Image (cartoon, rainbow, N blue to C red; front, top):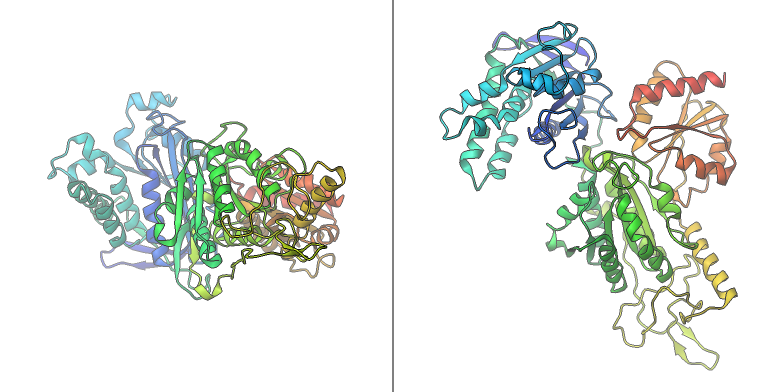
Length: 635
């Protein structure tokens, strides 16, 4: 948190201008911390700041109140310039109870501000989380700027005119805290008030109670002597190209990208899915858009979901299924069937911590090898991985392009960090979107030796090796589908060894031949091999912390290059040459080195892994230290 300018406000309270701030809201999972953070983020986006968020919450619907496992938090980093991560450490911690304080204070640097709800610091609550004494009184927080605020009492007092019990009134304390923080950082209020009236439209008295608590928090900041300073973070005027922006999460961007892909392809969108964290939001969002020709089917299980999606693809729709790692395991047989049928199908895997049920609400990148090889037989599937929440939109379009052009199932690997995190997104103009329209087969495509014209369902396009897409019911185009091997061209069942060898190699060649962009290397020292000796390679959601760490190294005078891979199968054509151009290649992954294993095997390059499987994203400072060690090793 950097102070640039001090100036006086009209009410004699100082207003200090900052270039960036990191705030973390923390409390019980029932305290509304995700809603509070989301509203603060929305108002911050409307003000024009660049931002990045990190929601972090338990897997239980209602985790045990007042316990460390039950703590829910929401971190937002906003700035007047381009930023890449939710931040390593909060400048401000709002702790709604002792559990929230104890769980989060280790991340808070000395000198930072801590706002605590003193009403919750009872002997029972302190004992429940293992505090021997009250940290507000024993001096353990002396290194911080602590604001002791009885949030519950102040909220109840503000709502005494409403017909609410003390417990009911106390539930609005998160809105009081939001009002206080909105005053502290000069956030707009109209959007939140409108949101509350809309959210509680069927219970207007609850809406007005929350709005009253929100205003009371704002007024408390205005009048109390404990908060003598408020802060201003100007819009990030130079961080974004011109355009219309909105705040967007990865899952929402994915949903919009899928809708855009279906419109660009002029195909109905069919989602066959089964609810699973953290992918369910895509199902929820798509179900709202029937007006765009979207059909959503919440199946009885994962297998039925993908079966329906593949059936829709056979019928001429853009078939999609959404899931996470455990669901991919159940869908694997049908994915193999899609490979054999050679039909377009999108498999959206929002990765989470595993194995098995694992960490449903935490993030990980450990499904890469499952996506690459997790099927019986030789069953290659292209893989696309977005790097930011906003890029989930373009990744969905790219995955659809590959699926439709090459008639193949495609994996899109997002993760919980991207899915739930958010950032500003420039809404593209319609003419910027790609043309994804396809030509269905309409008649015979092959002539037999006797001159008879017939339809061959496995006669391939010479450029893409894609087979024709024939919609059922088209006269004269009747053909057989199924998982048993087909004869090349005719599509008849075939057990011929040579034909099977040919079909397997053809499907692999089709995947290998998919057109994907070359990797672009960011090397300020020159072309690859001419300047920096160390290359940092990344994929997926590690982009933000990697780039932030690389910037820190460069500001300190270090020469280091960076590149990021979106296409994980096939790899970009120039990737091998890029890797061999550097003395050291460093690859951070939120797994135990899965991409590193693939790169070592394919290119025989000594890729050095930096691995983490904590359920949380990398921190920029953590990676900067690792990159510094790599630089020191080659000098």
